[in-house]
Image 1 (spheres, one colour):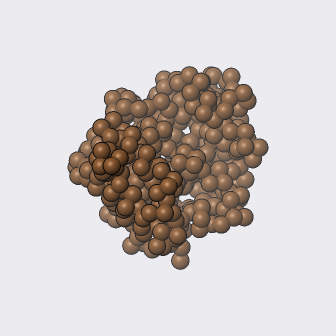
Image 2 (cartoon, helix red, strand yellow):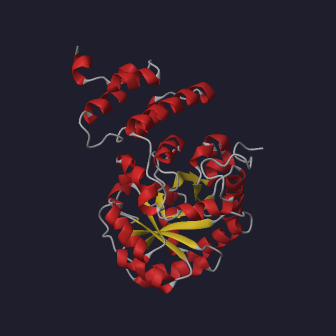
Image 3 (tube, one colour):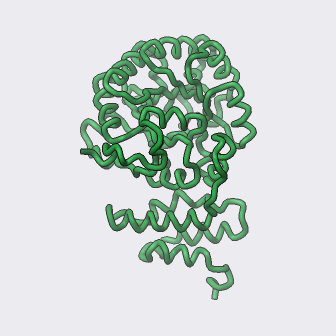
Amino acid sequence: MTPNENPENTGLQPDLPRNQRATEGMRVSVAPMMDWTDRHCRYLHRLLSRHALLYTEMVTTGALMHGDVPRHLRFNAEEHPVALQLGGSEPADLAHCAKLGEEWGYDEINLNCGCPSERVQRGAFGACLMNEPQLVADCVKAMVDVVGIPVTVKHRIGIDRIESYEFVRDFVGKVSEAGCNTFIVHARNAWLQGLSPKQNREIPPLRYELVHRLKHEFPDLHIAINGGITVDAQVHEHLRLLDGVMVGREAYHNPWWLAGWDAEFFGAGEQTLTREEVESLMCDYMAREAAEHGTHWWPIARHMLGLRNGLAGARRWRQVWSDHRLKTLPAHEVMALAREPAAAQAA
């Protein structure tokens, strides 16, 4: 039995069947971000929001077919609802990996059709797949046929200089015929040549109206939007017209924003934890990870460096948690140092 196969191991939403957890959380979600949204980051985000849907970093089919499956798929039960994002373009391989994801307890399988990096293109997947809607449809059908959890697709509104609405409309139409009912649309084109992944998140213009038009044309599909969304007002505006909003970098750099999401977007109770309590719980988690998996605390602590953004003393607090000279200390001792007044530490 895989670590999350136990039906009792349902994290923070035990009242929801597995095939409903992802749908409930799709209203607002945190985007999959390479090198950032690992299981430690997701543990922090779940402390802040009980309901938002969380995504893994993209995991390639090759990594799961030929690599260390537990290293790539292990997650904390507290993370539910949590989705596994896969990168690949071979239907049989994706079906195998989607089945692995379901067996490990993920609540959704998402296919990456939006990443523009050259490394991903060399693997013939990511954003370049938008040029092959029939292949994407075949991949989706292969996964839908073997799992009982939602299979979704994250993609762009276009690639390179293809800026017509018809391009993304036909892509969504073809893929939806294969059994995909949910599309997360990054409202920028992906330029496959000449721009870095970072530039691809900034230079191609945002065209939210194309995503809104998709929902109008496909009212029965679940359409969520991604790209450039940084404040509550933007989320509310998109939710008037769409089914979901996915937030990326802002959620990572300013994680305390998530503390208001459950009340603001899910009609749930207010966040009851303080920042200090979240920090303490993260230290408990670091101690647990060290004992169970031999994980050092600093790869975990890096994800919470934005927790005190905007508060007095935030810079010094970050400096303490980032100080490589303190790596030999237990996490709880580092927390105590970080909370000391600046004058006391200087003395």
